[in-house]
Image (cartoon, rainbow, N blue to C red; front, side, top):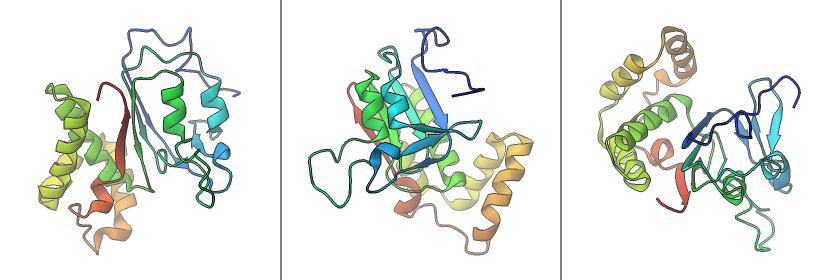
Length: 193
């Protein structure tokens, strides 16, 4: 990939790094899952083939794919045993211990909130599975005005403006972050959960 820095392969990635968070656009390509991709900062597609070419990721305890459809795999029209062949699975194949990824197209503001809660619980000593469950429960049970205030406090000023622009089309509808669409998209796979 021209003009990009390979952060997930030696020598650029010290083995002391235990977590990798990728917040980007992702797309699952039905009928051609190997063409599914994550979008890099320079606009290039990082495909399953690119993941398969990475060096070992055995030093990573957790990879978070904060990207749409990053846990989907296989061909939905065929039940041929490769339904698990997703981007997430390929990171596990490269020996990462676990992957947190999404099953559908996710909302940017609610995903930012979800990740904030997930990492707070992780930092407080919860296991990855417990942090996932508690972040889901947080979005399920916390009133929207409190969640929006948390989002506003946690983001830098330029990011706040971007999130406000993203949320404008839905502001009149007042998204209900307790709905499973907003908190149930993420799944945790792997070992040492």
